Image (cartoon, rainbow, N blue to C red; front, side, top):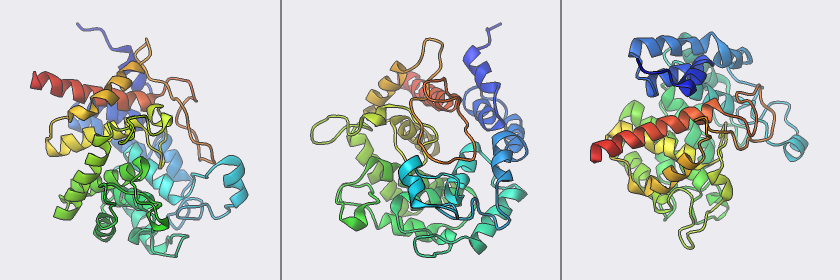
Length: 327
């Protein structure tokens, strides 16, 4: 008999939001088993806790992007607050709340009826104006069964000449950013997974991927230097921020949807990911964003992170399994 993997055991000794993904992605449990575990997200642990903070109108903290009691001093002194609807809904998607559940259907219907973006009063599922926000709105909407095709069409027309996106475009930016691009790519991928996508959305996803791949996921195209040292440090929850693990997990999901082979330009980022594995087989949380949250889902900076470890292990499992097929 094979010895149990202590890292897998550690991951399974956790919340349903972690356990069901370990069962599906790392130990290949039968689908009925991981689906049963996934169903617990609604009623147990982090998912149930986050749902308990929901307002009667379906929102969180009384606002779409900002809490109703938001004061600009809070952002300057303590960091951006993360308790409002858009970040709570994205976290439920990360947890894996079943989109077919009654609670999920009621939530997205309520948001469509009552939530409005602070920027211009637009109905929630019509999207905001910023590409980063709209990318995540597309991901959440597509995941939870909302027709977000109008936001997708808008995003495909907002690409910059280098193939990606930048939420500073309206203020004159002509170059794409890593963060804006990954937010949009994740949205387009979720849209493609749920609907098949459109020719324009698939083509836009291809150019956005090329933007990241040409830069090896973290380098400047001109100098080859790291565009931001923080891209190489692992963050959770990402919110709108970028790191190479987020990008690698995206490319894994994309390849699993389309059947594409892993792109060799991911190799340097994969090597860095391997190098950051601790001797005990786990990965640490390097940093986390400041600001108000409902609750924490990691043990703290510098501590082993189940979320980082889960994502890293499934990326490497995918990469190594495809490498063995190729060779």
